Length: 69
Image (tube, rainbow, N blue to C red; front, top):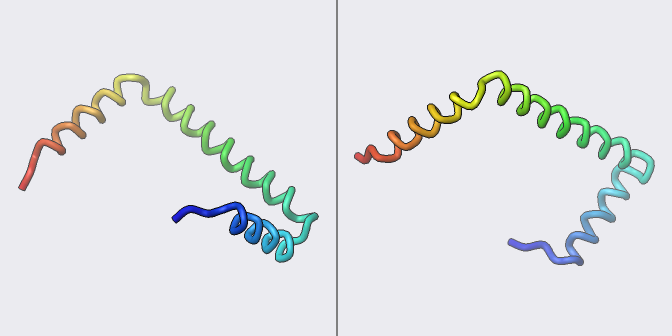
C-alpha cells in the first residue's frame, strides 16, 4: 500500500490539528534524541563485542538455515 501526496497531506493536517503547531517540534526533538541514543548504544555494543562476535553469529545462522525438516 503506497501513500500518495494527498494522503500524506491529510495525515500532516490531522497531526497539526490534534497536537497543535507548538507541540510538534518538541515531539520531533524527543524522537531524534531517542534515535541518537539507540545508535550510540549500537555502536557501544559493537565495540564491546568486537569483530569476532559477528563471525560466530554468521556461522550459526548458516548452520540453522541448512537444517530442514
